[in-house]
Structures are given as C-alpha cells and as structure tokens.
Length: 318
Ligand code: BDR
Ligand code: CA
Image (cartoon, rainbow, N blue to C red; front, side, top):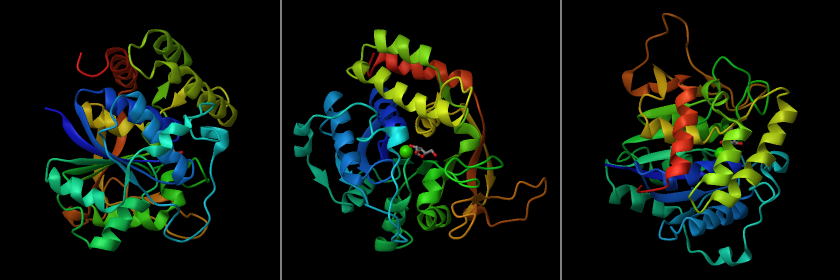
C-alpha cells in the first residue's frame, strides 16, 4: 500500500528532485503540492511545480498556492546562485504552464479530511504555510494528519544560511517554532543528516543517459547547476546534498533514518535566529510525551544512493 502524501515545497532544485522522486516512487501516492516562496518567489515555485507535474503526466495532482513571505513580514531574499533565476538551474519552464489550475490554502484542509488519518505531510520548504493553518483554523487544524516528515533544522552542526541556522527554519523561525509546538508526530530531517545525503555527478550522468522516466532531460542540467554552487561553498565536496529527497525516502524506506525523541524549539529572533534547539545531554530534562519530536540523527547513505538510482531507473509501476 502506498502512503498518501501532501507535499509543501519551494522548488528549487533539490525540491524538484524530491517532487520527481515522489512522482516516480510506487510507495508514494502524491495527493497535492503546496508551492510557496523560499528558494524562489512563490509564482516561480508554482510554475516549476506545474512544469514537473506536466512532464510527469500528472496534471490531476492539485497545486495549492502557498505564501509569499514569512510571518514576520520581512522581505525575502532568494538564492539564484544555488537554484537558478527560475528555480530550476538553467531550465526555463515553458510559458504555457502558467495556465495550470491553482487552489487556495483551504484546499489543504479538504485534502486532509479526504484522507483523514491516512495522510502524511512532507514539508521541504519554509514552514509558513503549515503555521498559517494553525493561525487560521486553530490548534486542531491538522489533527487528522498521521505524521509530518519535515526537512529543517541543524543539530550539533553549523547552519547553512547563518552560522547557527538551517534555511527552512531561518527564513521563517516564528512559523518553524509554531509547527514544532503545535503539530504532532513530527519526524525531522535536519542538516546533520541531509548534509551527507550526497548524490554524485557520475550517478546523475548515468541517470541522464539511462533513466526511462520523462524527467531524464532535466537531471544533468539541474543537478550540475546546484552541484557547482555546493562546490563553491564546500570546497572538495564529492556530490550535492539532495536535502529534500531525504524525508520522502525516509517515509518509503523506514530503516533509512534513525531518530531520537526530543522536544524541539526554534530561536525566533536575534543573533541565533532560526537555530533549532534540543536537549542532547545523556540525561535530558523530562518533557511531556506529546511535546516530543523525532529528530533524525543517523542515516544509511549507501541506501540513499541505491534507492535514488532504483527509483529514477524504474519509474512508477514497474
Ligand atoms: C533546505 O533549504 C532549501 O534551500 C533547500 O531546498 C532545502 O529545503 C536546506 O537547508
Ligand atoms: Ca526546499
């Protein structure tokens, strides 16, 4: 049986790999994609999502418009040097894509109630949209979601956007803290594991030549752009971390990631804005069980590569 998954994303190159992975993985039934600001402005993120769904022959999957900026009202900075001007590296989705039907945020509730207690939210962008659900509809807004698989945070390692913080938490720390506090059954995939979920250029070259999927022409150009940025930022790095693929693979391959239960908080303001905090002492302070989140602390990176290749070689249904 496949997991019903509602994604929240900001494509973005690693988000795009995550969307393609979800579309191709027979253990995942993608039931909607919320596309908001983050790596690119919201309009581009929606356009990229529509393009990928179009290529994959899945225009039946609803696209939901996300937010345009963080709850604090701050102006957003984008990252064309990592994700490209359009969010897909050198690739420009055709203009025809702009006609795709896009739902408003209320569609999230509709989808959650349609798949009541049998739906996982996989969030690989800023946390603003999920926080907004709690603000608009109260603390029980997402009670019928079975689990939240989230890419965000960094524990006991440096951040990637500031010395202390990971990008998804940093850009809207108020939302990240609210989601950590109000959502239940959170499985967090932070930088301390996703930094090592590297895909190497030779793997992508192989897939670029042999993948039987409709995404084949995108793989090399999108990856190369993203990898070049990582080579600049992390000299000597052997591949590019596909952060956003990790929570999806962790859902479909339950032995991929090991978690420990801790309460997670996010610093909302100041020098350490966006920093994720948890008590890693051997004897942590006791917290109420309902406040615990599952933090990813170890992952099987060999399995990450093998499963990634299998999915892009196999395509859905085969
Ligand atoms: C996260 O931030 C974004 O730039 C990536 O898409 C990923 O979701 C990594 O910190
Ligand atoms: Ca992302």
